[in-house]
Length: 162
Ligand SMILES: CC(C)(COP(=O)(O)OP(=O)(O)OC[C@H]1O[C@@H](n2cnc3c(N)ncnc32)[C@H](O)[C@@H]1OP(=O)(O)O)[C@@H](O)C(=O)NCCC(=O)NCCS
Image 1: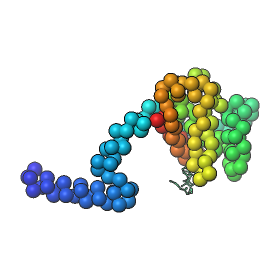
Image 2 (image 1 turned 90 degrees about the vertical axis):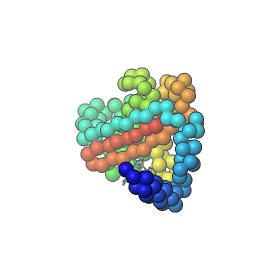
Image 3 (image 1 turned 180 degrees about the vertical axis):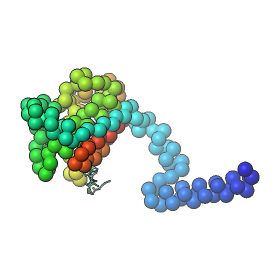
């Protein structure tokens, strides 16, 4: 590749970076800087996908599971939806994703230890307590990020522990 081509490529990269900067407000060194901040490191990451109808069948077969798996807050929030099972399924996915982020499997922490709450904007947040809270402290986790999505058929959650 000629030096001229490399120069042209670099120019295009700079233009793209400028465009990114105008849209997202930070670029280049700023972004590198953000990644290097120790408080921003990702300690754990988890994702989980749940089939809504599978959750529906399980909860219909064993109705007591609703109380065991979900906190009062989560059940009340789910009841306000047209299809509460979608919201329950995605919250179950969030609990399993949080377990992955903590590096533990089923049984290591209580189902109520991970609670999904809604902020005033509707964005979900994780409240972590009990054995999960203790483990999070041991791992140095100070912040949780969670994102949820669901359709009539599937529910997915992504969780990051920072
Ligand atoms: C956020 C939003 C785009 C999701 O819409 P959607 O594609 O129809 O629905 P999805 O299944 O993908 O996501 C639903 C989940 O998004 C989450 N959510 C809702 N508002 C949110 C927000 N402001 N930011 C992040 N997540 C949000 C909720 O946990 C919701 O699940 P729940 O109903 O079980 O609590 C929609 O709720 C919206 O337009 N909200 C208002 C605008 C807004 O705040 N947008 C910010 C996005 S960055």
